[in-house]
Length: 164
Length: 171
Image (tube, rainbow over all chains, first blue to last red; front, side, top):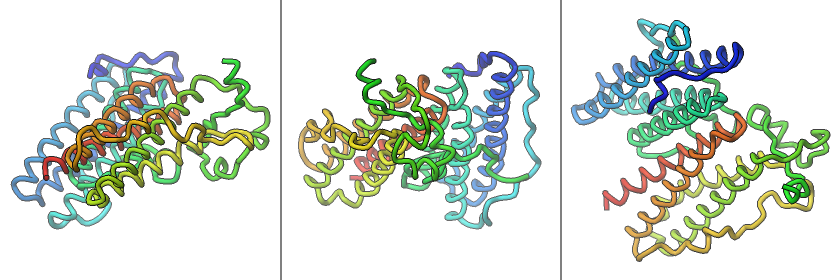
């Protein structure tokens, strides 16, 4: 993906909208990176290797988002030192559920980028949402009808996967 | 283009954010003057046709390989959800079904190449991957809410392909 080369936002309004969507995705990635660290600590060797691989992919995406925001002249949102998890994470099963949860939250944030006018960013956001869905399926062994969207409702509002 | 105008199809772009309102709107009257249908309606119809074709493929596969029902049933159910959500974005006058052509072209090629469960899974995997790629390549031209739905469905179908591949590897 070459989206890190910089989004071509047109006009102040489009630029603000682009920055907001990128910041939401970055916040979600930051939370996911934290969450994968928590999950990884609960996993056995083989699953921990998978968690490490996915964690790295989220770090790469985070770096791309930071670069895109910087190229827009916007200061990238900083990661929180810690995040409140959506449920207690003790043991393998909860760790795997957390990974699946995080992926869906990050996918939701990327759908915010898909709503932008910039076609290059749209495609990149869609590819990222797809990557999230594939990781979630690898973890959970099942699929969902609408990754990143609330089932039966409109698009999920992009929000960090865990509250600071 | 003129045929499109006669069809008086309306893309309910706001349906994603106001699903309850849209679900209650069975005609265009409630929305006032219908906007002219644009290329997004054709795009929506294309996505609907693809889902109908996939549903036909799954039904055929499950009829031919009942042992695969446990694997394929949940995926078929998700395609029905895709179809319902896409169809809900297309609002048309009474007397004109929202899902014309219930025998889309791809449905006629439902017979899996080769035979047996492995070939069936491989054929469905290819169909899912193709559908996901097709949606992903077209969503740049869609209005924002439809683009989001297309991206989500494409992600779902890509994960279907992954799951089907996993089942082939697992025997």
